[in-house]
Length: 429
Image (cartoon, rainbow, N blue to C red; front, side):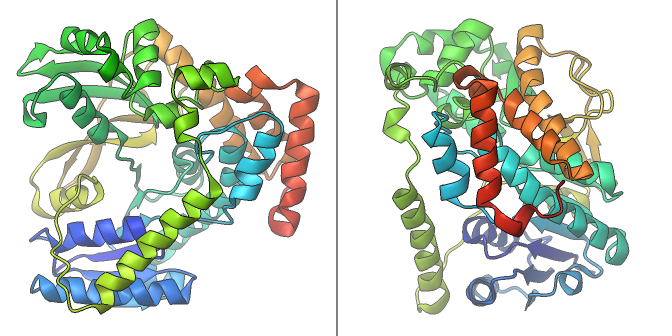
């Protein structure tokens, strides 16, 4: 029997489109029962119509349904994909911290914006996991919702559903590294571990030989260095390449976003986040989706590099694969805190998923990761205990925030962000 796939947050049009196209391009999944759920009925209608056209185009017998009822969508699901957004606003998460001197690159997984996103979002994800436990006891949860580490840490602390947090930074960084050394991607391989957005290429090889010397040579080329300034600078001083992009990585550490001169040196002002650009990007994606859903032109789907479809395919067919995913650290990385959320290689087969022990990270890399785990731990405590003060501690521990502001200044920024949420955080005390 084809599996049932429930996509919660189907109105997130970029991810929903990509994941649906992946399923449509996978023979073992293209006839699945697909349930699309979102609280935004208008967006849900568009993605539902897009899905029906897409699967008809590939000759699928998939059952496509839409629902604004979460438990209805989840009932008897085999796989649940979460791509939700809860109350995200540029004005609260980005503009208020920027007024105080905290210039976040993205602000959705780390920093003040990431902590407040966790306060709004993780309780909803935990509720979804409890629903899965109730109405889909055999389901696997594949979470794409940020802040990834805090989200997965919270879910696995409170619910029994098997959960992997998914990101595309490992596979895309692998492609970047192949490009930097002038190699086809099928000639390179990597062994990567750490935490989400701060995982490390512990091994990077080309045809079985160490490719780090070639990568260091590439870094010395000013034109290549300029393509990835922050990550090359981190590799220069810490010895290993990290998974997240230059733009995003710059907000995980205290070195790059503290003053305009440094931001100019590493070309970060050229890619500064802008509200108008962000709104236009979202509108453009929705317009494109509507055009594809309602025009007579074919969609012509292709398969992306996202892991979700490959995981489901491996579990359905037994064709084993290894991906990188976010799971509890129950002895997987020895020098990161037990129980924290770590990103490690995971074997997927017909029996489910099997995280692989990594041993120890290089100590300097583990230390950078632990600085962010401290923020994540306090953020999760804040969510589980509904503690306003624990949430403040999470913000105060953020490496970039502490590099720029005094504790009194952090408190003032934090209080202003809290007040901007009105009744949305009424459950916190």
